[in-house]
Length: 112
Length: 114
Image 1 (tube, rainbow over the protein chains, first blue to last red):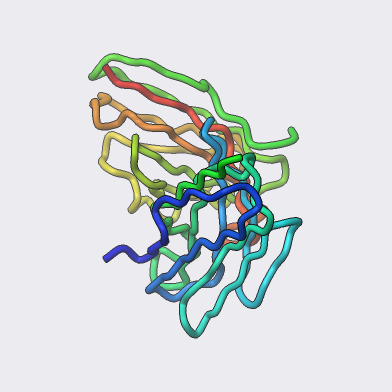
Image 2: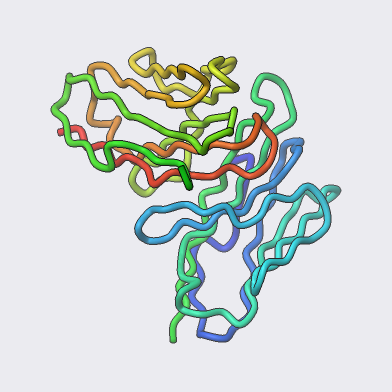
């Protein structure tokens, strides 16, 4: 079982829809990152959070440490949101402290 | 510089040759990370540096892979005797300090081993 699981793997939405991407993890963490990878391959860090909720524009990220779960929400989705969204956790155990462990990503396509 | 830069952006090499990939982190960032993304696969951690020190080399796939960082800035990832399975995009990221703050990613180097 992967230490970081994302769902869904693929998601197609119509422009304007509210989108949720989920991330569950099984290890102890000190922080969780949401990354966005565009079709050209560039990776952008969207959020880093260790508790609660963060909002940036139309993007909202939440984390529940007790349940080991995080969600990324996109409100009023737009075709330019089409990308792969990657959840990554920073472990807090053993010799791997600080390394990022990645989920396999969620490929989002927003249709006009 | 404004962001993390990597060179070359693309590298095609023959099996068995050595390659060097370079990463220039954001100025002032003491932590530097190398990742690999194989075709159709997720991101894989390779190695990190805090300053010039690399305490954890466990992510390197084999002893053909090595990395160094000098002057607390530029890092090079060297792959000796390249194999076809080494073909991937190699990504570098940096952060203010190890495990502290967001990581900023470079554009990557696409390595193709023929």
